[in-house]
Image 1 (cartoon, helix red, strand yellow):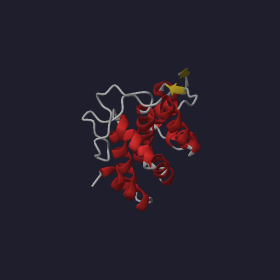
Image 2 (cartoon, rainbow, N blue to C red; image 1 turned 135 degrees about the vertical axis):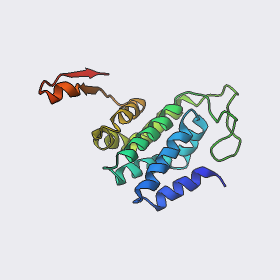
Image 3 (cartoon, one colour; image 1 turned 90 degrees about the vertical axis):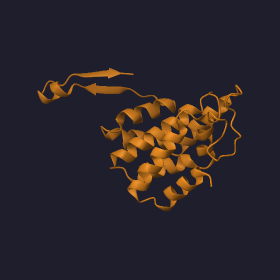
Image 4 (tube, helix red, strand yellow; image 1 turned 90 degrees about the horizontal axis):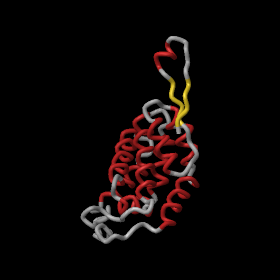
Length: 173
């Protein structure tokens, strides 16, 4: 049986199980990495909502926030006009209907649609207010926000100067 529906079903059934969410999100992030066909299938199966639900259910769990932000980033960034499908031409559902090697690209509106889907589901606030609060997931949250087309800037604080009471704040974009 296809793997993606099983992962999403487990995440939906065990929303309060932190390890199910952490590993489900990590698996979704890995499935979407360099695999636009998989990213598309995750969106089609309602995975955007499941990613954000997992993050909302476990706001204090840094690994969940990190994996969730990676999943958002990988799904969104893989659907921005890149080749579709897995390297072998198959999709996450095993259907073999990918477009790898054909030169086909995702429609221009696919990127906008996935961005809008995530944003309508509240991804920006989840990434800014939950994942972005944790040192262990702030970089991933920043990257996900950027790939969703949100305006972001990162502030870096020199830890040595902070400890010495000489806070030097520089902003990078």
